[in-house]
Image (cartoon, rainbow, N blue to C red; front, top):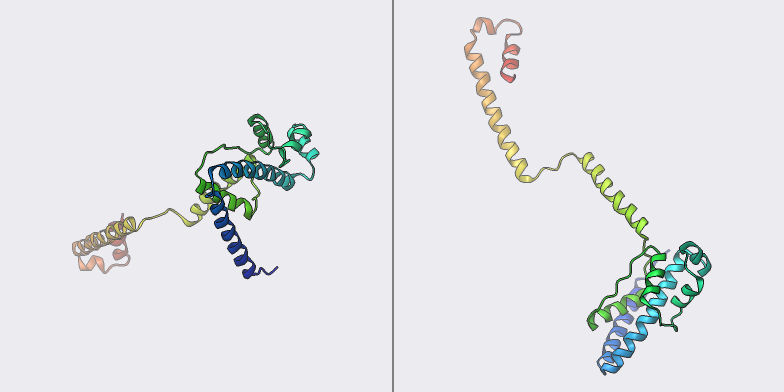
Length: 203
């Protein structure tokens, strides 16, 4: 399927315009800010719960059976016009998805960014078990890749290794030369003598 880059640009521009308009309205009065935050959070939270449930179960009944939560509780939590959920109920419903809930106090700048994110869409969130599997598989994959590549060597270690190798080669060359000098030409001329010297110098 071919995506239209123009549509993405138009959507982004529209969101930026909405963001600017939102900030303008928030600047009108403290009373407006208070009413807007309360209304938006209640509706956005209900929308997120409904979206999460539809990503995993078709009906509230299926979710209720899987999570051992009364369907009436789920129905109220997903109702954007209800808005009177207790923390206890919120924790129960979120736990049904095997997810965590974070109550967080933020600045209006961060709140406005969150409004923009919600407007772009609610992503699918993995349960703890799904996330735990990913965290377990990722290190194993890294270890496997590391073993295939061999030990990691820094540039400094590589440079030190090359210097040591050169020093060893020089020392080895000197040792071989001394061995050759210590052997009489007559013996060195005999079959296999030169090979014996080299092997002895390497041992």
